[in-house]
Image 1 (cartoon, one colour):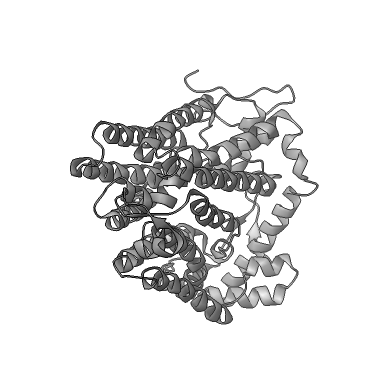
Image 2 (tube, one colour):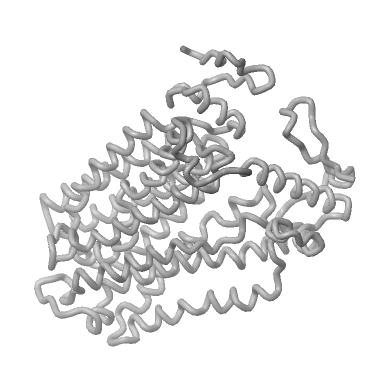
Length: 467
């Protein structure tokens, strides 16, 4: 019999998991969940590989050994070599298209309390390792300079391919495909619980899947656009993902080393290692504060304004005094601040908001659309950037910041005026606030009354504090 019972303090449809007495006082740490963590770590290496590919391939474009084969001589440039704009476009933009293939399985199998630590910094760590490998081989003469880093691309896939034979399939996925016995066996492998607790979690999982299926019953893709409330929620989810692109991050991430090299910085690969390491620090700091502070309407505009300011300063410094050592140091310092602002204030809150804002019934469709549009925007950014920074085209170099600074300001203004604050709200509360047609600035202090006691048929809503 299920240990999941309704509570009087929740809506009738809500349930809460009542764990057996043996769960009381039990430690739930990494040691106890070591099998689950091992499985999560293995699958999350896919994300590490994605970051490694971006970091490593981005550096190849500034590597003399690579340019000797795929580029041409350019005596007037700091490297003495260059790559054509068209070839540069293909290298990075095709990488972005490949990013459309999702490879993380961590979410379905990780314990709820450890979802963040299980998958938080893998991509940033992969990018750092990729830039470190490039930095270690860039001075080698000939093809070995880029062939050695590229050979590292096969290590992680080999580890994952072997490791997959030793971990179970996701219990939730098995349940969704009516394979209950296998789901129980997989859950037993992942969890350090007794049978009573396993059965309680299994029943909770069944109820959650049934509730999810019921919520999405009858939903269709075009429902996202059929009424004003859904259209608003869809537009918000898509636009909040797009602020990652309007911040200018993808040109800095995809072409950072090439950007540093042609700006005349003496050690572009080492500078890229520094910015990649700062990205990891920013993610770690963010993971420590997001649950305690985490205000989307505070962090997102502040991050966008910080990124816009650093982009503008990079452009101004280079315009006033190009090619000098002091300018190079200033550009690196500003790039470090930029990366910290992007990873610490923009990317995490952008994705969280995109997951919170869609309606429960259309969440899969809406988040999928937002993600797809986000990747499309990233592709456009990486595809067009070579036209601006490559010396064979417009040759803007660091002056490219003049384009991105106003886009950051516009994005920050959009967040301030249009993005609702829903931190700490239940999904039902978010639905209620959208149905009440509240302006974005009133979401934070709105007092939800719930469907049972509250929202009357006349459309009355609760008062807003400070109105």
